[in-house]
Image (cartoon, rainbow, N blue to C red):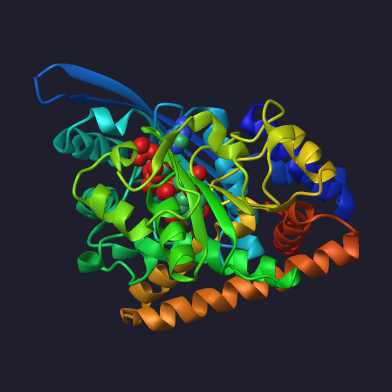
Length: 411
Ligand SMILES: NC(=O)C1=CN([C@@H]2O[C@H](COP(=O)(O)OP(=O)(O)OC[C@H]3O[C@@H](n4cnc5c(N)ncnc54)[C@H](OP(=O)(O)O)[C@@H]3O)[C@@H](O)[C@H]2O)C=CC1
Ligand SMILES: O=C(O)CCC(=O)C(=O)O
């Protein structure tokens, strides 16, 4: 299902549960601003390459718009729109003073050299610099981008507006990045998983995990699960998938990749069909890559008891229905992966204050925000007699609706 249709369907269902006025519902759905820019760069061989960049600023009722920038061949306007909308509800779920935005460039970052990526990032920043800013819209990394990408945006933006570290988060520490931001999404996923499992009298230790995606989010989640005694029995990325029923040595995989190795060539686990990953027998399934990977084509075959949505919108509404009929418990993206934006908020606060926190404080505050949000979601589930996804959506949408009504519409 189209990602924007799917996300909007979840929003509408939450709006109905909350009894929102139809006109307010319509206004909350329409993005504040959609930006589309052409980015042409000279490649290293002197030829020209053109790309399309997007930034969708969905809503700013609760504060500056916030969200990552994705570099991936499948980036398109509907996908960016859906991701921007999810950011609005996500920042509200964890109650940080932001709205939602998302950006992206349709490109294959693995096929561009470092200097081509730098030129592309700088051209994109030149095209949008007037529309982002510390108190308007603050980008961060997402799939295919990282701290280096944020450093280039910061440098290019600062040429127009003066040194502005708080204009992006997820920066390198040397440029004002926060300790703990790199690990934050994966760490938040693990805190969220612990909160969910505790409801069922379980803990990570001794349970089996399958993880799709071994980039920033997947590798940190896997590492922290491994440290807590969880058994990661299968992992995968674009190169392929691996399994080991006795548990994969995650620190060894991370070392193998850090040394330039390809995941599928790791020797401590056997190869498996990547299409089997999501339907592999396990206690907990963690999609940590693309959206829409759980759909009506595979949902009936999923064997996990719990799905933690570390990726954004990995589950189609059709799959949602099939999975909930099977009794699978799904922890929704707008809560499960909110640790990244929460620590981005801490980074922004540190930049504005000009005062750096130690990593212990960052992780402690993150845990506080994640457990507080889980309690609030459970409260909404009780009030509206709904599942965790609708609990999270009603929590987020209600906060944004209240802020919107308080601000009013007088011109
Ligand atoms: N970074 C962050 O702070 C946040 C990220 N998220 C979400 O988490 C997800 C992952 O993001 P992040 O870890 O940052 O991205 P990265 O680019 O760091 O990693 C993405 C991972 O997904 C893998 N992947 C991509 N396409 C496929 C595919 N078709 N099948 C299997 N694996 C695939 C990549 O493989 P390969 O390395 O081989 O290309 C890589 O391992 C995204 O949905 C993102 O929106 C959510 C909140 C915050
Ligand atoms: O850290 C941020 O600002 C945004 C992270 C993000 O893009 C996401 O949560 O999907």
